[in-house]
Amino acid sequence: MPDSLALVPADLRNDLSIHSIRSTIVDVPTVRRHKLSSLSVTAQSYVIVEVTLANGATGIGEAATLGGPRWSEESVEAIKANIDAHLAPALIGQPAHRFESASALVDGAARRNNAAKAAIDTALHDAVGRTLGIPVAQLLGGTVRDSFPVLWTLASGDPGQEIEEAEAKLAARLHDTFKVKIGAQAPAADLARLARLAGALGGRARLIVDANQAWDETTAARCLPALADLGVALVEQPLPAWNIAGLARLRSRPGVPIMADECVFSAHDMLEVARQAAADVVSLKLVKHGSLPNLKRVAGIAEAAGIGLYGGCLLESSIGAAAHLHGFATLRELAWGCEHFGPQILTGDLVVEPLRFADFCVHLPEGPGLGVTLDRDRLRHYARG
Image (tube, rainbow, N blue to C red; front, side, top):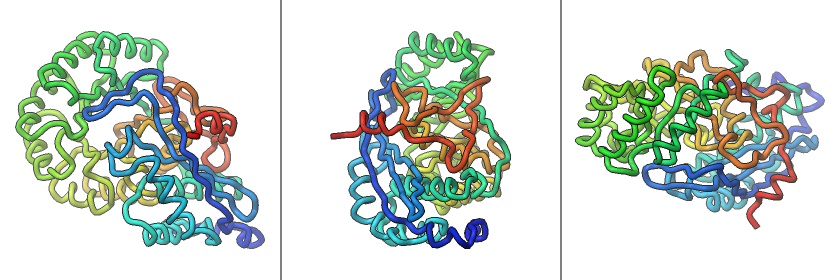
């Protein structure tokens, strides 16, 4: 990614130094329980990062987690502590528009902590974009698209409720692809649930499933043909993240295409999955990759290996979702669409004007930076005391 210095007028360069970095933990209730294989949540937690520049511009970013350090090793408490104690001090006084330099500094200050780093990187891009009056996507290479097919996740575990929920989304022309979270129940129960969903929605919607690492290889090998018979289009991370060789063995069997998620955090991870031919698709997430440029690096390796791209999420609000959309907007291919439905599952969003969902797509927000404005009243309302 080239240094954006050439985009910055000479008289603004001295004003682009980082003056302060502030982090706030918020907890936002969800409209219904969201159940994964190993956890369930009724409120989504975020760390909201605000980076203020010497010119007075403030950029915002967001780090999301699910149920504490369960999906990955980061919790919102750890994210905030590491930002405040280690990452922010490494950046104060540095030029905000030197994104790669900033990434190198935070990488030197802390290992991993990808969600924390991504929130800061997003806020830097937002602040610079606001200063220059241009969208973040332009800082990343310019847009290829400004709308994205978007799915909805069915994750209550109750097939009756899930059918009703899916029917409402179809009727409102919001979503016609549904990802079903499986793995919390026995495989037979999950397959029975999927059979009910497929029967009720048959021909009107596409189904994919996400096991969130819940199965061993034998269970997955037994279940994949049944998923194919039900018309499931894609299965996400059926095996533990460490078992890339197992994913490759599953992929060699006839059946449902496989998507890698938890096993691909870094560009090195992506290269190994490609080397072992272990996936047909990869889920891209800022909480895994650590920055917008890193997300594009992972996508580039996947594209070079012929692996499809999917825009993954961790129930981000409109802040985190907007950051992802600006990254996705610059990718030449995004064959599997995205799942940034997060703002719709929250009882209240964190921005003045939430993202727009219509005609089975989520739309790139317009305006400088991320194109969304932090609602400070809601930030105070949801902030953890």
